[in-house]
Length: 168
Image (cartoon, rainbow, N blue to C red; front, side, top):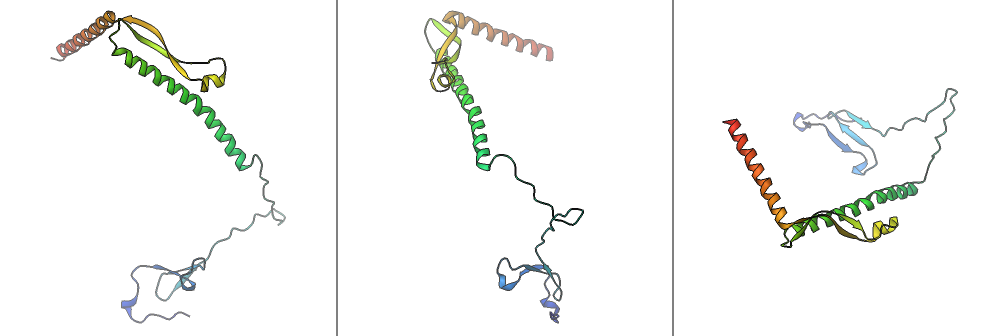
C-alpha cells in the first residue's frame, strides 16, 4: 500500500508518468495523479469476434496479388505514363529551342512554327527511343516578320491610348 506524503511541499504540481519496473520499456506505465493514488495503464487486447453460437469467426482469407506483384504492376503503369510524357516534353523543348534560334537569325527566311517529330515513327519503340528532330511548318521572310511585329506594336499602343482616353 502506498504511503501518503506528509509534507505538502513535496506534492507534484502536474501529473507525471512514471515507468514501472525501473524505467524499462515494455513493463507498463503508471500515472501519478495524486501523491497517494496510482493508476496503472495496461495494454488493451481486443476480444476476438464471435458468432451467434459463440464460436470464433474465421479470419477472412487474403485475396488478390501478392504485395511484390502489386508493386510491379503499379511501377509498370507509372512507367507507361512517364515515358511518353518525357518524350513529349523533350520534343516540346526542341521546338522552343529551334524557334528561339530562328527568332534571332538574320537569314532572309525565318521559321515561325514547327513541330518535334520522331526520327522513326514506324513503331512504338522507335517513337520512344529513336530520337527527335525539328520540322519547320511555317516560313516567313524577315521583312514580313519585322512588319508584322511593327503592326502588332502599333495596335497595342493605340489600344492603350484609347483606354487612357476612356478613363479620363
